[in-house]
Amino acid sequence: MKTIWRYKIQPGSTIIEMPLCAEFLHLRVVDNYPSMYFLVDPDYFRVDRLFITKIAGQDIAEEGVKYLGTFQQDDKVYHVMEGVGVPTELEIEIDRLSKEIEKCEKP
Image 1 (cartoon, one colour):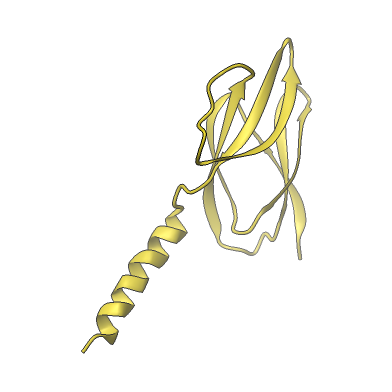
Image 2 (cartoon, rainbow, N blue to C red):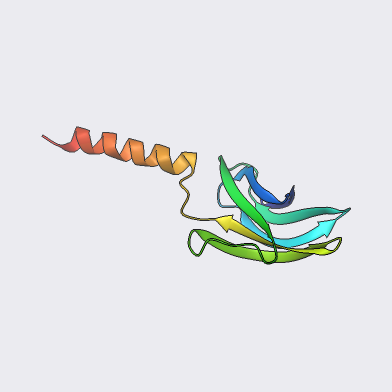
């Protein structure tokens, strides 16, 4: 069964462990903490995901990030992105196992 989980973030880079296939829903400040909400299946395998929070006006990579949202805290405006294309531990392990399987299949 799926449920909604809240994850707190901070300026800069934040790595968050969450269930595989967690779906981003919303970004907002709650009790003075910037927070992201995800629809998750708690029974799924956990993976690390990278989130980047930049103050408006800071440079942002042109590739490798996906924009999630904007929030304001105190007198600053922040933009939150997810690092994409960064291999997760699961993807690295799948790639390793695929190579092992290919070795077994070759005569």
